[in-house]
Amino acid sequence: MVTEVVIEEMTRLSSEACLELCYRPLYTVKPGACKIVFQNARSLHKHFSDLSTDHNITAASIITIAESRLLPMDNDETYALDVRKLSSVIPDQIDIGSMMSIANKAINDPASMGIIEEEVDDHDDQLLTTRQAVFDATSEAEEKKLRLYVMGTVLQKIDDDLPLEYLSEMRQVTIIFINLTLAKGSKHDESDALQSAFNTVYNSLKRYHGRLNKVFMFDKGCTFLAIFGLPGDKHEDDCAHALQCSHKMHDLLKSTPSIIQVSIGVTTGKTFCGVVGHKYRHEYTVIGSKVNMAARLMMHYPGRLSCDSETFHHSKLSTHFFTELGHREMKGVQNPGIIREFVETKKNSKKQLENINENEFPLLGKQYMYCQIHAPDTFFCHTIEQKVLPLAAHV
Image (cartoon, rainbow, N blue to C red; front, top):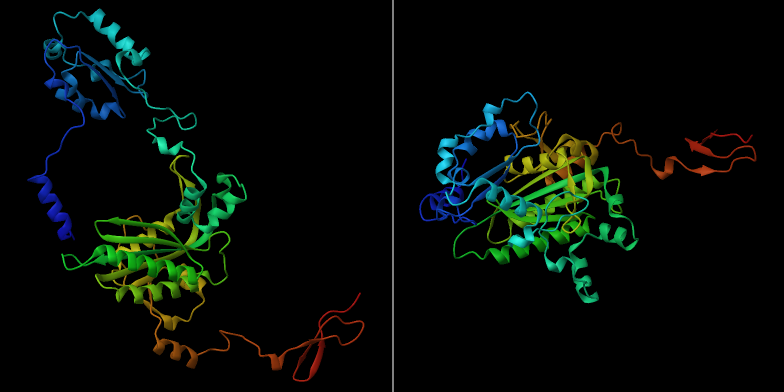
């Protein structure tokens, strides 16, 4: 289903919007100028017909196409251009030798022709455009402010001078995706609603020992990404805490003005947790199939708090807290298993207490078990129904 926002934007792009090129097309350059094109192609055999009919390329005096995957058995005729068409764009007053000399100078000595080369990173074999602020030293006050935007688990590793590559690992975590649909119109202040939503999410996660990783906006609303089980925050009940925290956030966010729908997806599993991106613009995040699945659950079960089978199993919560949801095809997710909605209500809590199965929860009271030193040749004894049973003998 296409939303009204997308329809409006497509209508605007096809009517009033105007696309401005960031360069001057060669076919608009006056005749007589030497025009050189360098095209770095990929899968040239699939796109050569498009290149050969592109007026911006065929208008050039010299055409250079780079392709690193050509083979000796490739037919030269496949990549032949119609010279008769190209002859009309070559200036009569410039000979081929002069043009080749200009092209060679542009490649070997670009600075002499006013061509500015971008900085090349030694590690990443790629062109970069970096801001000067990246290299400026930050003051102590600025660093203190920047630390507020980095998760505590990462700050601890940085303060311990741990290399960033050691932050990357595969570990079991619980992923939470939260999507907020905001009301539109002049009567609604989105900035206040987003600030209130952020405070709700951040404070709730802090209470349950979760971490907020991302906040971003896209055409379907505002989305939060949270994580339970990161290094330094690992607990046995992470799945249960994640569900309880999500339920609390779901209720609080629904009551926030200007928020008309709250959708939450929760998944658990092995996920890459670590630093990604270039050294000047990297971030700590999570990547994996369970991350994608949490995002899919969030979008395919709108208005609900949905979770996968792994989260249901590891939470160790009673089935009375869950309701099975219908199967839905999700892009990139194969065999998602049973999807459940977490519903924590007073009615369900009371029902859980009334239906505790002792075989399911084999708990022993203090009145039935205690340990004592019974004799010099016995380490521990359990007294059950006033009978002493030695468990280990001294050797």
